[in-house]
Image (tube, rainbow, N blue to C red; front, side, top):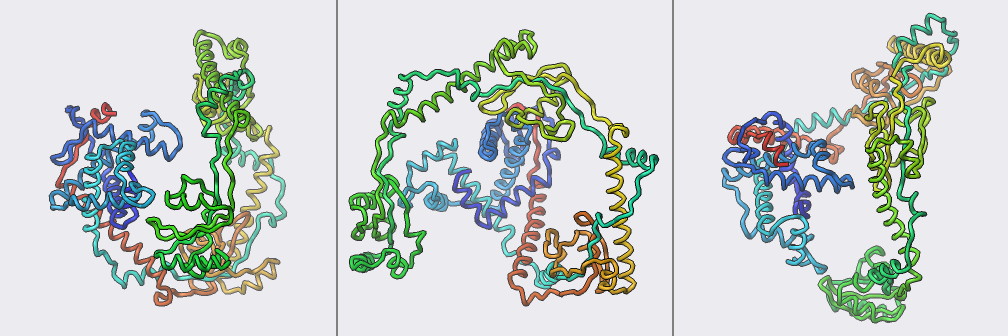
Length: 627
């Protein structure tokens, strides 16, 4: 949507409404209201309202464009459908239609005056002075694919839905007793003493017997199973590889220079500082102080309350300033300060800190950049032509080896690669074609077949031939005996560390002193920072299961859990109850969270009511045909 909607989305009303729309769609699901009606002229019916193929297609294209901006890449319709854009689009249209019907039935309206005010206050439609500019308004609407009437109708519906959504959840306040109870639960803290039993301190691990090794190899088969490997023959070529074959004529450089000369010229730039005040009298008073030789920045801070970031405009060109300011700033010599200048923003005093003269670029100045750009563009064109020739050659029955030889392309053999791009030693295979499609293509192509000529990136292509597929299989024990033995010992150390930790928990629960146990085992007793029960808590450095047990335990209770490279044994030392009266911000956060939850419940109930009042049917055949 346009900036108007983004601006409104910062308000709580719109946030609530958007949550309502999303919740209603997620609650119902698309499949719940799909029908196979034969009337393909209507994609969906929502109560008495029909959703046309043209409307769905238009919104689908807008949703595609939005995703393209997010991903920074071009999507075709098939890719968009695979990403679920079609279902998201129809779900959103249905939800919006339901709320439009609900608002209409309740008599909720947005007046013409309210629409006009919203548009005039939208900063995306404002000029440099901050005032509404009709030309800019129309340009933005055209870029977004709206007519003025269509945009106003859309904005009216959104404002109506916002008003309805705000009314539904207005005044939702959770009971104070509930807020306090939940705050006490969330904010309670505990302190524990800990011991750490490291795996690598577990000694006296014997060598495994043959039968133990064989059993471990079988039990941990997944750990010792080799992935599927493929032997590949690859042709990959990039535009950069073709740059040396591209000829650039002098006339081409001259023609491009003539067309784009202004791009290489640098306008005069001035480093400016300014003081802005609301009235002329104050501006004149400050100008007098500056005329007496006082420091510009000091006066700005003391007399106008401005900080350095506000005062320093940096280097700017004439076109970057309002006309009134540009005329004054660019008529001054280096180091001079202007008289007070009025603009729609107030009264300005401008200091010229430095001047960088304009520079007119000659063709020799521009030649390196123009040559590089022309060479790059021509090599991309040559790359595309080469890709077509390769496709034709392979389509004519040539092997990848023959095609590479005929077209003078680099041929590469990859002896073994798995789906993650690693070789049989587990090391990444170097210099794979750019982009994320190579591995996917290599593992989608059947054995003894070629892939299509595939675009790796905007300036590279590849073709892969799958020479051989080696299926995933358990590696024979004889070939990895040392590896299995090492893994068996690691598992034995982990098991021994766990048994030791469990034994310490028993001793602590029986009342033994943790300091005494630590001295006996030459371990260090550490005391945690106070920690809460919330996930993501980092103060304790305790494994999550241990934190959970500490909040079940009484003082003196103990528990153990797996940490990094060992086991943590913890004894609860202290309980710190939460005090709502001492943490107003924390209580307020809980209150906001509960209020959001209550609003969600109300929204869900209202969504169900709307669906009962305005039944929804979707024609899947018409949906597919509309896209």
